[in-house]
Image (tube, rainbow, N blue to C red):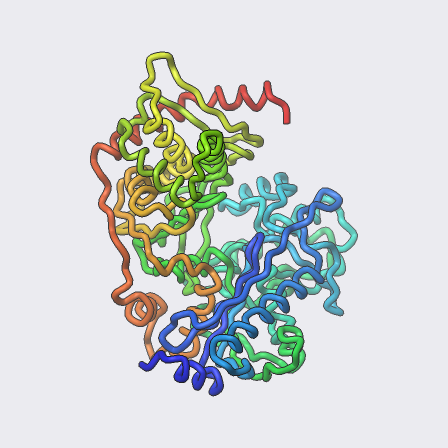
Amino acid sequence: MDNTTDSVKERINQGRTVLGIEFGSTRIKAVLIGEQNNPIAQGSYDWENRYEDGIWTYHLEDIWTGLQSCYQQLEKEVEARYGTELRRIGAIGFSAMMHGYMAFDRNGELLVPFRTWRNTITAQAAEELTELFQYHIPQRWSIAHLYQAILNQEEHVRKISYLSTLAGYVHWKLTGEKVLGIGEASGMFPIDSQTKNYKKEMIEKFDGIIETKNLGWKLEEILPKVLVAGERAGTLTEEGARLLDKSGKLQAGSLLCPPEGDAGTGMAATNSVAKRTGNVSAGTSVFAMIVLERELKRVHKEIDLVTTPAGDPVAMVHCNNCTSDLNSWVGIFREFADCFGIKAEPDQLYTVLYQKALEGDADCGGLLAYNYFSGEHITELEEGRPLFVREAKSRFCLANFMRVHLFTALGALKTGLDILLKEEGVQADQIFGHGGFFKTKGVGQRILAAAINTPVSVLETAGEGGAWGIALLASFMLYKTEGEGLDRFLEERVFSGKMGNQMQPDAADAAGFEQFMERYQAGLPVERMAVDCLKA
């Protein structure tokens, strides 16, 4: 297909484009793609959550200001690059950080400030629901927030008419449809992958424990309708078009795909929706997702169960800490270089130090580090203290120092993945890596392959992120053929010829990582002591 500026301009004018917008924790990003699913224009807007009255939140005006500014930047890029205005869009998809709590009354008014995934204020509810359902309910899930509000006897609970997430809220306001993609819905309430809906027996159990409270509603009445990838989820209304585009140029009528969470869009953006595939997103925090062939044998507090955008079960290991401490140490080396008048570019500094780690001993020479800027639920620490420890006999050198910090960036993640891969016998043929941890070619990829003893691929396109992922889901809805599944669509129409470089695990590295993990587990009391002795 012709991809000249004139041909792209023609497709824009004909409305043969797809728009994906994702609300991340610190950035809202928009990606406009063409019929070949490649980005043709982008826009972004930086924002930050607020901590108010003990709650991490974003104001409603933050949401709409951010969305409109992001779209406006995209519009300007379209005009600058292609000399035309963006008036028609074939399909649109919205995504956002998963979980959280947005409760509305019958007039559509928000009852309490938006409670984001970051809040850890639902411990009692999460524990009681996990016991009730015999299914792990994390604190950040919407149902945990709802039940905690009930336990707290919050006045607004009786007024709830609709409960949604950020992605679902934006979609509702632009289309009038109270729906969610199944992957996003799986972070609100447990999903049955057979029926592609909320687990009926758990809905009944929840209604049973709140029956005597006479709240005036049953759970299924206030939850969004569940849709799977490929289904149509409404059209952009005239009011919605004005909410998105303040200039008034954008026409109503665009088709919308089901709104999805950032986990689902990450799976789409890394071609990780088929069984026995998975992805690891590693940056400030880190999470891994593996698409399951079967249900797990038992409940694990370290493992969250969600779904792909197509509704297949996924095991998720989520850790709060990854590269923050590593980045701090790289900053120390930059400062050291500055003292000698050496101006090292950040990319060059990371490349040199990361590659140096490959020269280290397989087990990091006996060194030990913890990257815990914050607590880590997998290792049962409510707070964290970054920590570096060594014995006098340890082989202390730059290569091992960098290597141990790369290893420990994945230490908590490996703790959770070992439960899946070793205890549960989950099979993964290939894992796709994306995020800053993998930016230095071949280093983070090799370390992850050693940690999980599984082949790891890094896709160049993974850098496009979740906005591209939700655009792909909207494209699938628009262009899929009869009987074509999401996995085949991605494999054949998006990622064909773009599978990236696969790296097999090195046997010595894998054995060294296991030795490191023995030391990591044995040293956790030291980390706990640091938390106790060094008060924040």
